[in-house]
Length: 153
Figure 1: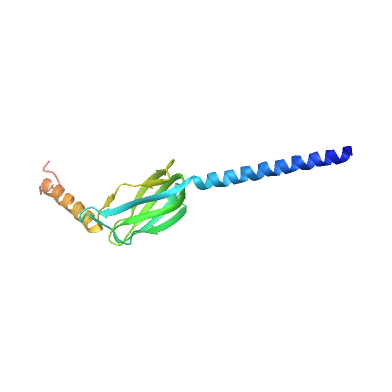
Figure 2 (figure 1 turned 180 degrees about the vertical axis):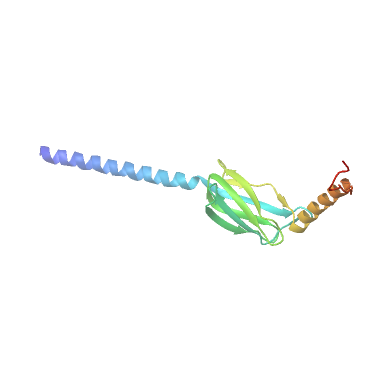
């Protein structure tokens, strides 16, 4: 009789321990999923004031490992869903534009909305650089003179 009650007590404790382990496992999984969210924003051409359509966006971890890829829609909108909180690098690539990188810290909110990111076309950047070079060249005055190879002395 005493051995029956002892084995019953051990069974109840074992059942209780199993339930506690299951509870903490469910809690850990649900908390891992609750620390995810959405990152979204708009990429816009700085000069045209329009969204850049069909641009490729790569979301990378802070050590440059690929996390996810998305494309902008026709208005330049993009979103990444179910992204764990953390530090990321967002790479923007599109034909006619220089690749742009954006550091992101995604913590404590279910949704991170980036402000509109304004970018310039390669042609606009090249024109800006050319204009700056021309302005610098116009500022410099070149004086031509000849240095004799042998002095009179």
